[in-house]
Image (cartoon, rainbow, N blue to C red; front, side, top):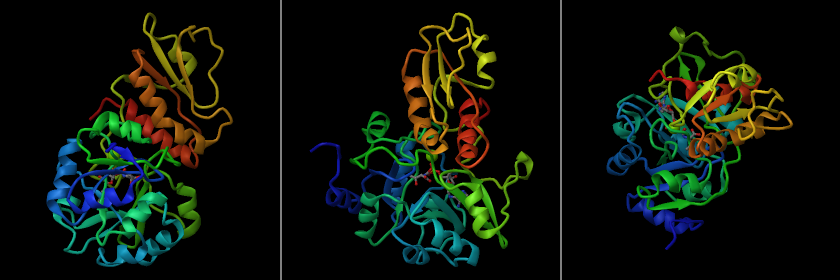
Length: 323
Ligand code: TXA
Ligand code: MG
């Protein structure tokens, strides 16, 4: 039997057998197992080589299912869930005891979301437990946006990859946490800050590193290719690495600067300047350059609004050497 396919019943059987199955979501592919079974969840940490202090998020089919796993669902969190689920928003809430400690790395809170992908929703509806699923990449690397990328890196570790095509959003979910009565942003992703604030008013999103509400998995260096990635003004950076084979990721266009050598490997995120298209392309462009023979990847920031904020966050982490 092929390892990549659309057989939901087969995926279900494997999950019931405590095996690992890669699942499609609208954001990125997840590496899924029975979220209430500690042995199955342990396999996820092992396959990804994920530090044991970095908690996983749970995926469920509906708000009703989520309610069976959380201690309470504060009003603002419920408003967000009602508006954005199924969708790319993870909400960190107090967990009930039935959620094993290994899922949350010992925290008394857990991240939970309803993903918006028909295959995975059908799979979730057919199960009476949640699926724990981090992004289906080795810890620290770029998240996979197609079944092919999962196969390349975790093909041996998964029993099956449920093929839901290319991920529609292309970057991970936005993560929010209830802190006292306020909503704080832990990670920007597929739901824009502007959309959240339009619904519930100002949220906490400290730009200042020291004030940030830490999420255990948000290391400075993350989502990172193996090649060195240099972020900044493209025209300037193109002059800086004589003799090196350069790869370029630009937002709308690549300048006609003399610095752009004939054989430069070039990728445009969105020729029309559409941030959704840019988000969808980001990780596959990074992967293609990482696989190519370029020695250095040059990238530039995109406008810091809407999905652009999340794209810039990923680019900064990809460029960071600071682990
Ligand atoms: O879009 C997504 O969120 C994808 C798809 C598969 O759903 N999943 C994903 O999972 O990106 P992962 O594990 O790669 O990222 C989840 C992040 C981690 O940085 C983790 O530290 C944080 O969520 N997290 C999980 N539980 C948490 C908690 N209780 N408190 C704070 N942060 C938490
Ligand atoms: Mg991840």
